[in-house]
Each structure stands twice: as structure tokens, then as C-alpha cells.
Length: 357
Ligand SMILES: Cc1ncc(COP(=O)(O)O)c(C=O)c1O
Image 1 (cartoon, rainbow, N blue to C red):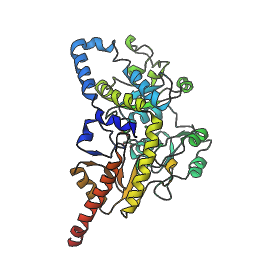
Image 2: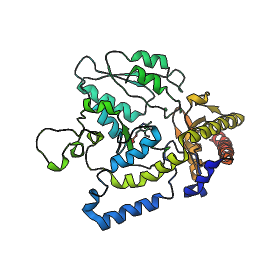
Image 3: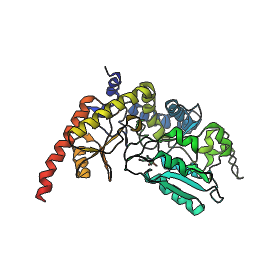
Image 4: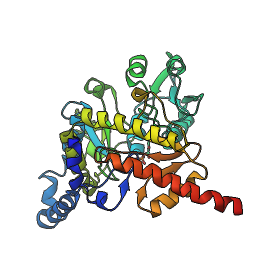
């Protein structure tokens, strides 16, 4: 029995689509309707008073819901608008003009993150990226070897977006120093900074919310808050935070361990089905090294993915990788079969069309 399927009724979209795209956008929890109504009612009835009645603290109170999922302590996670803002905050904590100016990353990191690293080269940083040999993983020994005493920051993705390869976060953080699956929706990203590092980090990308006494409106140099508010900047995106909380609550309640177990079982089955259908798989074989997505190499993948979307099969395509298929805790085993069957059907229909061209 798969108890996790009990959650399906909380996600209305699952009644009309095969949702295999939680690596990009998780399904919307039904409760988001109520939360956004609560936001509008609060704004309308409480007006400016809402700031004192919870809005001001929301980047941290919602951050605590994420903290529960990732194992962070209370007050250690702050919500920001997106991953790029989190990365900008972190990069702005360091001085890049000295000899310890190296940033180590993987060439397969999400481009947005690398754009920001290259932008601080103007301030003296040196960016070193470790390539992939097989287009799937990053060789851990080479990544670790790149981290030396000139390294100031290691910026890496826990799971690579193109292949779903899981990096060894423990080994990398021992040597050196991100909201899709959480169903939180756009406009909400989280930043975790270990508590003992707070006093050492003063982001140059900042704002009044990061000040120790924001309502004193002081015109002196910045005096950072002692808590994780120091990593915030301007007025937070309150509606996005209302929308985000339902997904975090559901994931915490469903349980990360159970979700992972199911994911490993379903992605293994997807790989089997894809191979039986004659497709090559561009995701790691070893389940421990594989995230929640299976990347399937299909001829004319971009067009096949577009046709699948038209048929209510929610997947996507990444150049140089393939069609990304991601079951989540709310997916049934039947949907795995349906998805592969549909990919095969669309791909087959395209072959005669391609020959005719
Ligand atoms: C792995 C990864 N990192 C970073 C980003 C960029 O995130 P944002 O658009 O929130 O800045 C994405 C966006 O899809 C991503 O997949």
C-alpha cells in the first residue's frame, strides 16, 4: 500500500494532468487558494497593522517550515525571492581582492549561478569550474582537488538540473565550506546559513530589513542584525510566502524519508520502462547518486516534449540532456507506464513525419 497517494486529493491538478515536472514546478496544493485568500483578507482588514501582526517575521517563520524539512534549527533559514537573490547575498559577503579569491563550482551548475560568479570576477574573483566527463556526473575527486587554500567559496548544486546527478554534499562541505519539489511555487527561495557563521558574514547586497534597528531609520553605516535577518534585504514578497507555506507543511507531514524511498523506487521503474521502450537514459544508474528526475534521450526531444504538454503530460526538455520526467510523492505507478507509453507513441508518430521532410 502506498499511503503517500492519500495526498493526491490535496493537489487538484492531478485530476487533469500527469504531473511529471516537480523538478521545475511542484503541483499546487489545494490549500494555496485559502492561503492567498487569507493574504488578501489580512491586507484588506488589517492594512499596515499586518506588518506587526506577522508579516515582518514571515521570512523567518516560513523559513522555519523549510528548516524542519532540511534539518536546520529554528531561525536559521530565511526566505528570499529566488535562488539568484540568495546567491547574490552570499557572494556579497566576501572580499575578492586578496589572494584567497577562488570560487569553485561545477561546469554543469545552473547557468544563473555561474553568471553571478563570473560577475564578481570584476572584483578580483577567479572562477574555476570542474567539467563532467560523461555529461551526467561530476568527478568528486577532481572537484575536491580544485578546492585549495586559495578557495573562498564552493558554490555547487546538490542535484544537477540536467542529469539529476546527486553530488556528495558531505564530502564537499567537509573539504570546502536549493523550491520545486517542495511545492512552494514561484517567488519563494530559502537561504540557510549555519548559526556560528552569522557574526562573520556581512552581505554587501543588503537593505533595511537586515538592520539591527530597522525602525530607527539610521543614516549611519549598516549595523547588521545579530540573527538571520542580516541576510535579508528589502521588503519581502509576502504573497509568495503565503502561497509557499502549504507545500512545506505537506512535505514535512508526508516525511522526506518516505518521499525519497518512493522516489527511488519510481525512478528505477521509469529507467526500466524507458530502456524497454528503446530509449537511452541520461541519469545516474546508481539510485543513491540519482535525484528525483529521470532524463530520457528521445529523438526530437524538444518537439516531443511540446506535444506531451499539449496532451496534459507535464514534462520538460533540456538541450544536451533529454526529456526530464519526475514523479513525486503524489504520483501513481500507472502514471509511470502512461508517461513512457505516451513518449513512445509521440516519438513513433514523429518518425514518419521526419522521413517525409
Ligand atoms: C539548480 C538551479 N539553481 C538555480 C536556479 C535559479 O533559480 P532562480 O530562478 O530562483 O534564481 C534554478 C532554476 O531553475 C535551478 O534549477
